[in-house]
Image 1 (spheres, rainbow, N blue to C red):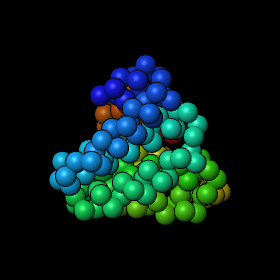
Image 2: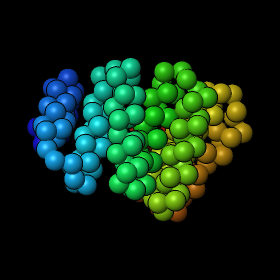
Image 3: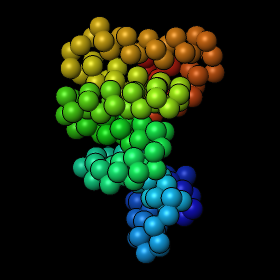
Length: 171
């Protein structure tokens, strides 16, 4: 909770410290499904704080540790969030081909989990990646997914889905 409060105050260095302390405390507890789920969530929370700090180099190890836990839980939502985080991080680092693979994985997991919000986040990140790769036709196709969703529900234009507000950026 302290990490969430710190992140809410935009104290991202402090948030990372609190999240890492929570992970260390979790590691001392017996392995349970609840503990594994919490460890995944903490690593996703750390990712957000690290992005805000611009510390992309520290993100991938957290996501690499989170994915096997999410897979063991059979939690497609968490797996999709991890893959989307990988895609965004790799894109930000300029590693576009691996980012594309991670983005496609995020989209597939979101679809399998029937998670429309995660699908929109993945489509948005895939649009950014395809644009960076010079595949403008595919980038437009991914961005149009969000624009279409927004035309069905105009409130989506202002809802964050991933690292930005897709309804604004996609245009």
